[in-house]
Image (spheres, rainbow, N blue to C red):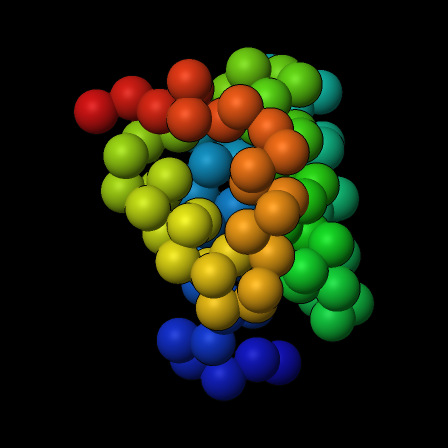
Length: 94
């Protein structure tokens, strides 16, 4: 288990929150559960990439606060390239 406020725990919380919002949509929810599994297996850097790609592929709307949190986590994990390679900013909702 990761310590509270660790980037891994923040990423897990963020991903679970997004997954709850899209729970009615099977495919994105399944993809987000896979991201949580990656985090649980100490693959948080890869999970950032998969989360960004799932958001982009499934066109999952994300809240501004979630996007900001994702940027913070990606920065802490040195994984900003994962976000730069996608265009998830277009799915940010206020």
